[in-house]
Amino acid sequence: MVEQTIQRVLDFFDLKASIVTKPFKHYADVPVKHNGIYILSEATRVIYVGKGQIKNRQAKHWQKAHNELKAGTIDTDGWRWLRENVEITPKDWTLNYIILHKQTERSAVEGALIHLLQPLANDETFKDNERTLKG
Image (tube, rainbow, N blue to C red; front, side, top):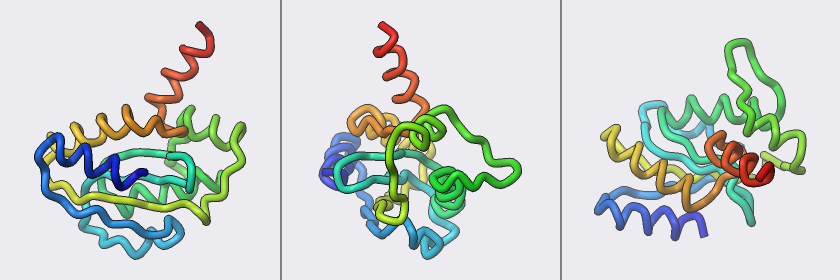
């Protein structure tokens, strides 16, 4: 499901890029130079969609997922809610990422994927869902 959605978004924006898939626990194998979009997911749900320097961001998400925050790591509402309300097993998560060089491409693809995939820990979807629940 995730890879098909990524491909739909890339096709919509007429972007040619490869989708790389690997176990999240192997995030350290991602080359440090890669910038783009990444998606953390389980078999049936998407955990997070983000953009930036992929390897560096995964190290911070690994800390958040395991509630092992180091000094300077910001713990957002979405991640806090996820840890407190959903049984998660980060060692079983999948990391998909797309290398995109232009900031405008990264912003467009990230926004589209957040909208379509509704990730649990993204603040954007957390705040939208919270508003919906409150009425």
